[in-house]
Image 1 (tube, helix red, strand yellow):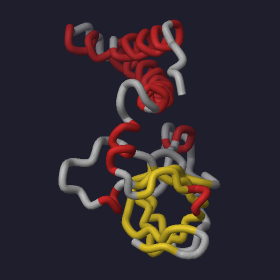
Image 2 (cartoon, helix red, strand yellow):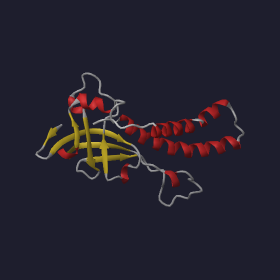
Image 3 (cartoon, one colour):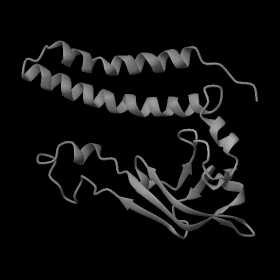
Image 4 (cartoon, one colour):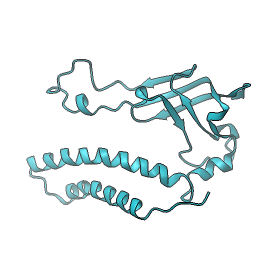
Length: 179
């Protein structure tokens, strides 16, 4: 959007998943390559403090209400994650916290298989596995209670094992990339 003596001014929005209101900083990084013709100002990667002036969060309602009875809300009182929509209303980001500023080629290269992409996918897979293990435990009990042994249910329950296997294989066969 613009520049100051100490950094850049960012205006726009970004979805932030998982525990947004409890973080100290957020990292905005490439998710997918930008298509041809995208203005360069969309090619940004940065870290910003959550209390930066002009940074606004629209959080989904927490599933946990103060004083909620775990009997009435058994899952949300124990496992709530709060996602947020972040609005950058002319937020100044210090230059030392900006990694990519307008370089579409660099931006698009970040999520290549030989770049940072495998690392962020491992973190995402670990998060997904944690959630899948919870869902697996819950749905296994539900299927047993209603005596559901259908092929479709068994297929759905196998996702946790596929995810766990992918993570184990990635860790056992990892390699360092030069540079």
